Image 1 (tube, protein in one colour):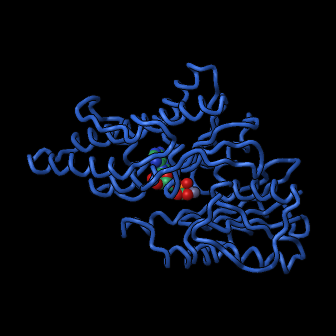
Image 2: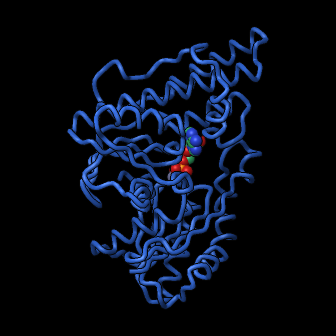
Length: 335
Ligand code: KG4
Ligand code: ZN
């Protein structure tokens, strides 16, 4: 089965072609980050308009790269949510229109299921069952995964997502959007131990998270630096390191707990924050100590992309899922 995947949930237009026998044939991405950066975050209306502009050229590019004619495509999958409604509608209407024109089915895919399954595109994919840590700009969740569509939520953030906390911490220190990679870059030059931030909700049982307090802690620490005239580049690096270390430790503690609770030894990390090297190293160390293994996607497939949607949609189609021609998307959608 050959599937075209379209991703438009936020600020990246992603298109990919996946073949259930040959694997990923081509993928292309256009990131709108530069356009949103001047506003310090994603402007939904600008995002929708840009998806409209990029979608068809990207589809052409992918089909050319894969040397694939439209009549060789068996289905189209698109992100149906969660995400920005206007942005989602661009992918959904484009997918439904092409599916109608080409006489093939279109299937709506859950964005977080796409992230969750992205490591399956790697050479050594994880085997079911496993625990997945989904860490993106909009979600922080621990999920037990027993197979495609067999997901059990173990815990989630009660307030900000981990990526959101990275972005907000970066913004209040005057760093550009998106803040995750900026914080990670500064943290490399931070002084270990200068600031120590709390590890929220790790002192009580359970697998839920809370990151909004950490963001406030960063703000207070930075304001203290400003008040004492110590708001230097080095202080920025030191706050970045303390913040990142607190997020990484908190996620690592909860992942360890989830693995213990489920008795599983495979951990998948997915979503934009899974590109963070300090997080990967910390989880690898923890898993190494318990004879387990951690899996993640290549950096380009950690953040939003079309390949994960083509892959997840293909699995859904192979399992028999078919959607009607209605163009419907959801801003919020539990997985
Ligand atoms: O999965 P994603 O591309 O979009 C959503 O579905 O939200 O994730 C974007 C998030 C942003 O918050 C961004 O700051 C964060 O992932 N991110 C990172 C890194 N790269 C991206 N956070 C920490 N370290 C990174 N290297
Ligand atoms: Zn995402």
